[in-house]
Length: 169
Image (cartoon, rainbow, N blue to C red; front, side):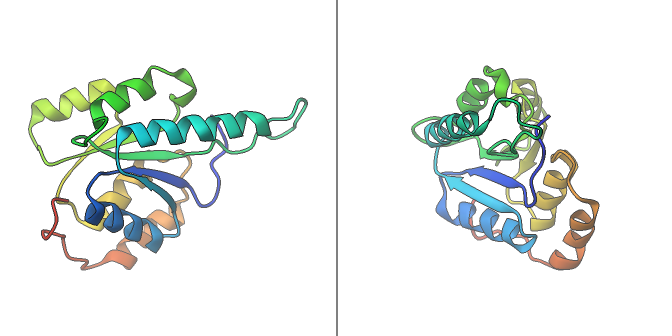
């Protein structure tokens, strides 16, 4: 598994601008880096571009492998251009991305939807609207080698943060 950099890089795939900004700000609170795109096509293009750059950065005989370009993917399922389910299927069809945890964001809380998403290759599902602490907890739970001290600080940073019911998050 690639080395996890500090801070981790989270790819946010969300077509709703308010939801993207909210996720970026929550991640910023705990000094996680984020890259935000608005649909699955943009996410696949970004992953391909970063994979190519990463591959070029590998040197023969190199003692340490540079960190992979993305550590975690947080994606909405319902998006224009290329929806989240199709994007997840395409990502999971390429073994180079197998180590990247993917968490789906969905407004549907049904058990059937959750099972379908998990079968597609997501490690978890987060139902919208969500509390910022829920987002950070789910990332900390699935992010490879996430530092304990950052997870412990989530409660302190977000204690009492309101659930955002103003957007479709």
